[in-house]
Amino acid sequence: MADRATPWYRAARPEHWRALLAAQLGWMLDAMDVMLYAFALTAIRDEFGLSGAAAGALASVTLLASAAGGASAGWLADRYGRTRVLMGSILIYSIFTGLTATAASVAELVLWRALVGIGLGAEWSAGSVLVAETWPAEHRGKAIGFMQSGWAVGYILAALLAALILPRWGWRPLFAVGALPALLTFWIRRAVAEPEIWKRQLRHAPALGELFGPALARRTLLATLLCSVLLFAYWGLFTWIPAYLASPVEQGGAGLGIVRSTAWIVPMQVGAFLGYTLFGVLADRWGRRPVFLFFVLGAGALVPLYGAGHRSQALLAALGPLVGFFGHGYFSVFGALLAELFPSRVRGTAQGFCYNAGRAASALAPAGIGAIAGRLGIGGALAATSAFFLAAGALMFTLPETRAAELEIL
Image (cartoon, rainbow, N blue to C red; front, side, top):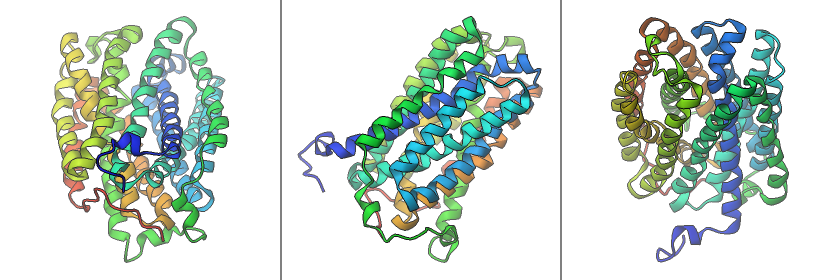
């Protein structure tokens, strides 16, 4: 354990920072690629003549595929290494995001977005366990918080690219830019080593069935349910926020259009960045459970106000950073909590399964919220996600507090 007189960021070694940077950049570019679809949603709907539910279902395809990719990547990361799988995931989501630009039909669009999803899901499974196993226990929450903050930066990049490219050249060049993250893998291969804790574990093929054995079944099921409820809330809300801001007021939107809505989305993601990073600091100090409850209760209270505020651009501008802060920050719990709940021999498998089974369940959210939006307007549909934030707060207290827990190696 580091000397408490030494600031935590100075106590960390270069290999800690390299692992964190690799996972953070991978997650940032993951966010950029997946959110490009959210910003292009209106243009894609118009070109292919899709209903709101059908357009949401395309996002659901990506989420379902990402669940399969993430669960598989967790097993592969236990077997072959965290860094190797991280590189593979970035290559997959980058290449197929670029190929999305070539889609000439809905069937091709479905295919490319499904293949993108495999890489998107795999990145978190490999990157989060890489950081969790590399950083010391007393600073694990902070490191995971910084890793998660990459999502906010990637979201902002997607918004800026959409504002720059969509009005001039349309949605296809926007996705072509999404192929560039593949270049990151060259640096990861040279600079980032596998965690020592992974190198020391007994080498064997991890068994998914062990997660449902007597020792781990309860934790596996509760962690999966928590991920499912919370990811449903998240994807139901944030898949549709760009469309909410850009859509006409008579459709329940804010009437800002794609370009102007960027000025509302960027402050929201600045709030998200602060939420991710502050969550880690607070969770290392006060514990995972109370800080998580603070964030999800805040999200549950703010989302209905935000959904009802579409006629007041000033209100949306004021609430946006708070929605970003509370609506994202809780994600920083997962990389630390799931690593602390499971031993090293199945840690990647467990994180991949629990998080991505939850992601599979949440695949219903974009289409479901899209269908509700057809009846109540987009703002009313967004408010419906509040119940899921509140349910997640209750579920968190069925799992043990794991602050500063040393990771099991065997």
